[in-house]
Length: 268
DNA sequence: ACACTAACCTGCAAGC
DNA sequence: TGCTTGCAGGTTAGTG
Image 1 (cartoon, helix red, strand yellow):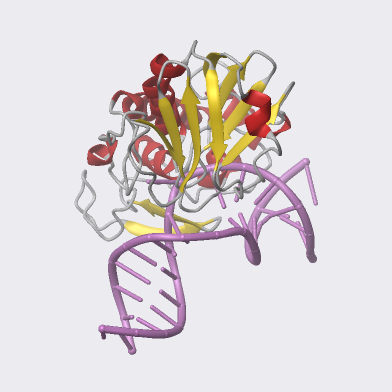
Image 2 (cartoon, rainbow, N blue to C red; image 1 turned 90 degrees about the horizontal axis):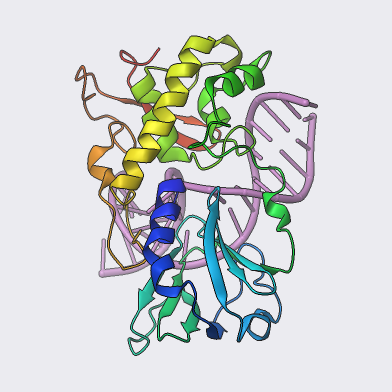
């Protein structure tokens, strides 16, 4: 999926084309996503103006006059603006027609995503940690949260309670840039090293947003264009290939059911 | 509280 | 060629 940079890229791509317009029709072709799409959502949102779009963690929030739709792209979801006359593709599950003629399609082969309506709070957002690109996320937070804990640092920074938006790609890349092994016990890492790590998490996310995100298989922004950050990946998906610094073959292990690639020489 | 696993679902690549 | 296996960007529910 889409990690934070891909969601942010999607938001920036679609927002100018649909914000301010009225929803003429929302069509749900297959509402069987991670959670069932809210019953009756088409009737609820019809005729409401889309006031604004925001992002929280990897969730997109479409703010309407009477409430909001919370959209998640799961592992394989994407949103794109299309010409409504173009035939739907397999796995195009939801379509939103706007009063200005724009048509937004939600495509998600694995159906791990979400489209939920609420007149108030979305409770999925209740227990999320801070946004990584704000001052609420810092080395101090990583240090304080990790004392007397034994979890490996990679699953720790991928845990939404620690910080949101950091998935398998950017966790791997930030640890490489920081020279920290992904399986290091969090309780044994110094605040100085967390300062380096927090800085690299922010840097790698910023850089990925500037490149329009990472396209591995099928990610596209709101206008159907891929991202380019995959060209910058140093370790993710490169198990067995040479380290870009020292040329030693990169090692691949599994941590918390996720593949983790790192350099045994450059990361300690 | 913490650490870890299985599960949701489809597509694709690798191996036999 | 075709079958089986394992893996893929996330998140939550359940186990010990």
